[in-house]
Length: 220
Ligand code: SAH
Ligand code: DHB
Ligand code: MG
Image 1 (cartoon, rainbow, N blue to C red):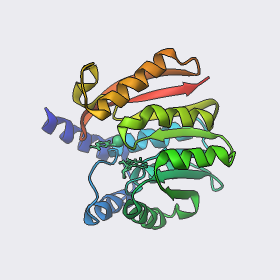
Image 2 (image 1 turned 90 degrees about the vertical axis):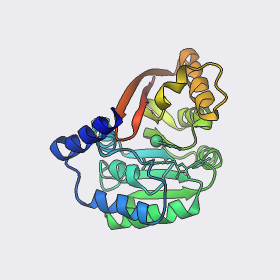
Image 3 (image 1 turned 30 degrees about the vertical axis):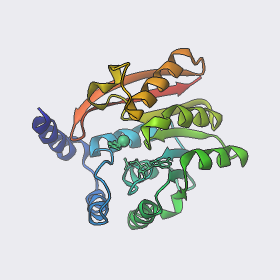
Image 4 (image 1 turned 30 degrees about the horizontal axis):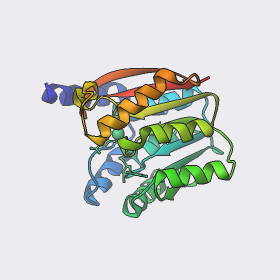
């Protein structure tokens, strides 16, 4: 099945998503730099892009930059005075991402901050930055609940929060799992069940990234 999912994703990328050629160069630069090939797929990148346009986003927060592939899909949805603040712990990843953003002409829209995301998030809150309209959480899965909590501090009613990789091949249903990613996602789901501040749904996905899924949440 994985082979079919990949073939269909490639078909959909050509037939429906129709990314500009520059996105391929961004992926190639990431591969060349030896970064892990774990960026969102082109259809997922386009989903983020369309969501940002649908909510009229001007300010986007991303947790987990890697090579900037998702960053660029998001930045290209913004007006000229928009901003993506993207948080990345690995300075090598940040360097590749900055070069990719420049190559895709969104350098002036993207602010990549190197450091552990919780530190950067607490700094953003301390600095009282204007609220973000859309948040994409895609770093280490163990800390998803903390990233969501900080995102809420940095949100306004109507902010959309997207969380990647919340199914992980179905492992998420294993209550006894000691995998930190699974524990993180399950803690996040417990938080969603109790939290009055968020309305959410989770969609399972298949595609070039295997069997996984994403959560879409709306801040009340
Ligand atoms: N959003 C990217 C993929 C991100 S991969 C895309 O779709 O194109 C996850 C990234 O999160 C990696 O670059 C990893 O270095 C970073 N990361 C992992 N732990 C982190 C942490 N604690 N703080 C900030 N970034 C982290
Ligand atoms: C991994 C991380 C991701 O964000 C992703 O979309 C897929 C895989 C990982 O760390 O393996
Ligand atoms: Mg991901």
